[in-house]
Length: 128
Image (cartoon, rainbow, N blue to C red; front, side, top):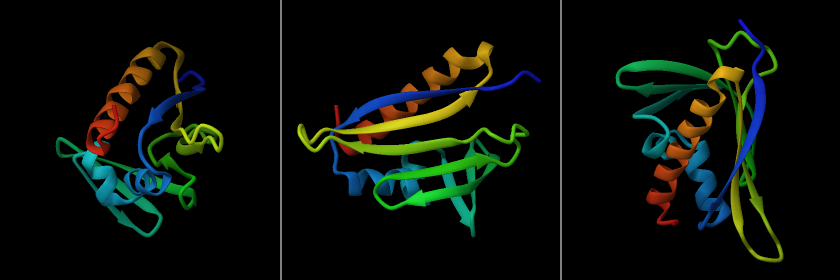
């Protein structure tokens, strides 16, 4: 298995940091745009898509700023995925920064998946 490469994507979001954080950190918020259903037991979130489950451990969480998960099935120790909210004090713009890891030959597909997922999130938030 080849080494995964870290990448970041930035998406402007027209929503408050507090509202956005609810959608990226709570099981009910995540189940509206990220997965069909999300459950959690302690630090483990169970994401369900079309009946298939994938579990991720909550690595860190800072209210209204960021949340970081690690897929339990991922055997690369350093990989994770993170949602980070960036707020510009001058322009008052809010952006969602997605950090993830992918193998080189899966990079474009992975980025396209995030673009589609965040597009769904923007629709739910009423952000264009």
